[in-house]
Image 1 (spheres, rainbow, N blue to C red):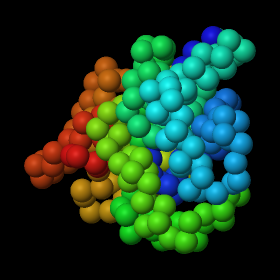
Image 2: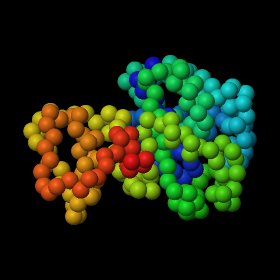
Image 3: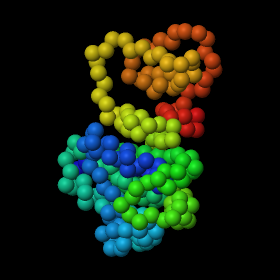
Image 4: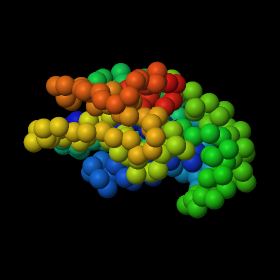
Length: 237
């Protein structure tokens, strides 16, 4: 039985595959790719629209439970120390079914980026499947068009247009608790690299629970608002 299940959501080109590959490489995640489950259930050609339509049929047939059912089979073959990454979920009923089946072991990570950035990435991407002519064509599918709404139900949200791929995996891994706390340190000092307003307050707020004391020095507070922990990238701050 896997120790944790990470559900990944986000629009096409939001960075899901890159994040997933980095989590596999750095933290030995196992990956369950929903496009493989779709292809197994509905053998079809490797085209974006065909996969979208087949996924919608699976959702209607199972009321969104097909990912939870696949995870139930997958976890039987995994050790308790392993984490499984699901790339990716597309509708809330899929998420609800997994949470109902696995409870507190589930964490939902949503990646986002502005539509113009997604369109730019889509135009430049090199994919193993046959893509539609444009990003707008890919978003004609209703499920794909509404995938951004899953942000409201996510535990962790990262704007990948504001972060390098390296920063994305570090932010996600940190919020998932994948980095162990070192007890050999006495004092850690956080400094800014510019002239203020770099986000030191948000970072300090996120790290504060790991320390006995938090000491602020320097000039008077500029009145910045601290982001909630799951919005450390600045979303909805």
